[in-house]
Structures are given as structure tokens and as C-alpha cells.
Length: 548
Image (cartoon, rainbow, N blue to C red; front, side, top):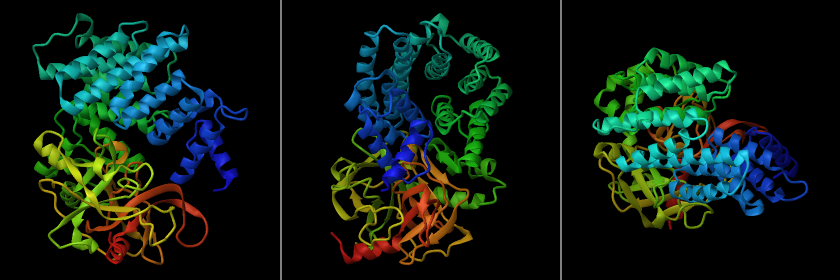
């Protein structure tokens, strides 16, 4: 890789801008910055803080974690770097690791006599609340809910009464009252008084010159708690249109609506439903994707007409197409480790579709950079589990299936745009149990012809989130001369690795493995914004000729 190019990319990132580059180029950039840390020509702490903020704001949590951990290894503890690292770990669902780091960070901050330490100590307390809140979402454990309230309240009652902690208390107390109406929180945390006080507070802050994005989201949520839904919608629109409202911030409020307020964009019963629907349509328009929580999937199955609300009038696809897509979701799973941390996506197909078994046998397909015994940073099959959203939703609890230790077929990853037949970035395994309702997805070896009218769609679990469908701007750009690689404009996020790529008949034609704003073209020179998939045809050909 060109050293001068890496230096330019590093300069962009350290200035607080995410550079347009391939994933391997970003990895090289993070590595380059790491080698400079501590040297006379290396970046200072403020530059690294800006880079970490930009990475987290763009939901690029793995490179943020790598950079922060490299800083710690070379230069030791920094208050803000540690907060950004903990934030990335929480978003990657590594709650135990985040909790351990917070424990040490809080102990260190308490020994420092500085305003920065006092500020960051309050941020750490908020992160403690965030971890407990996420554990409550995982388990519905009322004790975790109570712990979350305690952590946020400890900071809120301190100096400044920060509105971020306060609005989380409002949401969590409302959830606590739903679980047990007989519970009475302390006087200063009761609703609706606390919500009214927060609304007055953020309006005062804005009138005194606070032009950041968070007061707008706080005002919206406070109005939600007060059942003033029209005002909540107004504040939400202001928040979504704010120039500093990055994907991380929007997803944070969306997750709060889904997980704590039980908002469902496919219903129209509550204010939280209405707000969730507004965010969904905004994200579809601006980020070209649609996320489906287990509750939304359940709603779509029991009430197909609910899809009309979000998708009627869309030009790229029809409601009928979305209904067919939902039928496939039972066979799309999220790969996790033993702690439940989400690492990627995979899907079920018949073993015969890959030429490695009978028609009746199921296999699970994902990338080798997700599951492998040999690829760096991949999870070993013996440590891997798979969850299927629809099955978990139907049972009302998370259900995991152990990956069988024997790998049926694997091929290492290659560089994007390279068409080597022995580098297909695929792993095929069996599961020790299979999901209820999970059937083999239909595959198609015939690749569609690239054109402006030819569409392909990707469904997966990006960044550890719920199932997500990439819908708009889904043009098939090109197919390589060997029918091995597909390039498409379908937008995806980090974590979509291993997702199925569907044609318009909802047949799997490829395995998604990479994407970039600067993807090398399959023909000719130059780059373009594209994602890349490995064709099912090439996987079948290689698996048949060289099985393990």
C-alpha cells in the first residue's frame, strides 16, 4: 500500500474526518497512527481524541477500539481516550469488558484533581448506567433496571444536574412503572415532574446559546414522557436535521425509543411508535437502510398491512417485495461469541446448493473473516454461536445455536476487487441445533446482468444491531469476467459481513464481504463507491472441487 496515501488518510482521520477508503486501507491507517504514537513526529492526544470521536460518531467501533487500545499500550491512560474506548466496547456489546475498564477508569479519575477529571468522572457514571440499561434490555431483569437508575441518578444529583443523565432517568423510571406500577421512585426522580424540569432546563440552555444536537433529542424525549406528542415530533425533526446529528446520535435515540419506550415503527398506537416511524423514514432516506427489531418483525408477520405505513409509494421496491423478504428473515442469523457479542451475519442454505451434501441437509454460510480457525481476528468455530431474530422473538427470549466444531468448507479472504478463485472469504459450517422455522434459502447460480434497472438487496446484522435491510440505490454495477465478484451500490454498514445478497426474486446470488467509498473497479482503472459480494456460483465451484 502506498505510504504517502496512508499518511494522507491518517492526516484526515486525526483532523476528525473519516477518510473515503477501503476497509483494509483504514486498517493500515490505524496501524500507521499506532506506530507513530509516542514518537517526536507522532500525533498528540487531542488529535487522537478527534479521530476516536469521528470513528465512534460514524459507528466504526472496531477501528476506534484498536486505536484506543494502541494508545493505552504505548502512552498509558487518558481520560477521554478511555471514555471513547468504553463507548466503543458498549456499542459492540462487550459489556463485561467495558465494565472492567470503567472500574479502573473511575478509580484513576478520582485520584486526579482537575476539572477534566471531574467532567469525565460524570461521563463514566453515565456509561455505568448505559451498561446496566443494556443488561436490562438483554434480560428484562428489574434489578438491572434499578441499577441503571441508580447510576444515572448518582451523577444527576451531583454538580450541574446534567440533562443527558436526567432524560435517561425519565425513560427508565417510565419503564419501571410499566413493570410494577406499585413502585414509587424517590421524590426528585418522579414523573412527570422530572420530565417537565428537564424540558425547562434544555430550553433555557438553548436560549443561552447551546447549539448542540443533544438538547433537541432531550426535549423530544421529555415531551414524549409528558404525552405531548406533537411537540415531541417537532423537536425530533429539529434533531434529525441538525448538522451535528451523526448516525451514532440518531441510532442512540432510535434505540432508546425501541428498547426502553417500546416504540415500533410499524404500529401507530403510541407516541413512541410515531417517533420511531419518523426516524425510520429519515434513515431510509439519508442512510439508505431499514432496521427491523424483533418486535417489528413480529408485527409485520401478524399484520402485513403495517408495512404500507413505511413503504407505500417507494419507487425502488414494492410492499409485496418487502413481504417476501420478511419470509426469508427466519433463515438469517447473527454470529456471536460465548458472551453474546455480535460479530457478523450468516444464512442457511441446502448443502446441495454448494455441492457438499444432500438436498435435505442444512448448512450455515458466513465469511471466513467472521468464523475461522486460521484467519486473524475471526472467531473460532468452537467459540461461535448463532441467533435468529425471528425465533428469539417468537420464544420471547434469546435463543442461541452452537456452531459445530468441524468446518465443512472454508476459503480465506482476499483484497477487495481481486478475483482469485482460492480467496473467496467464505466459511461453511453446521449447527448443533437448527432454528424453528429456519429453512434453506433458495440460491441461484445465474448472475443478473448489470444495468441501472438490475437490483440486488442485502439483509444482515450491521454493527451488532437488529436485522437491517439495504433497500435504496441498490443497482448492480458490475460482475467480473470470471462471474466470481459482484459490485453493487447497495449501502451497508460495518458488521454486514456474511450477509446474503438477494436478487429481486429473493434468491441468494452472493455472499457479502466488503464495501468502500473507494472500491477498485472490476474493469478498467479507477475507483467508485460500491460493495462487493462473492457469487454463490464461485463458492459452489470451489467447494465441489476442493472440499475439506
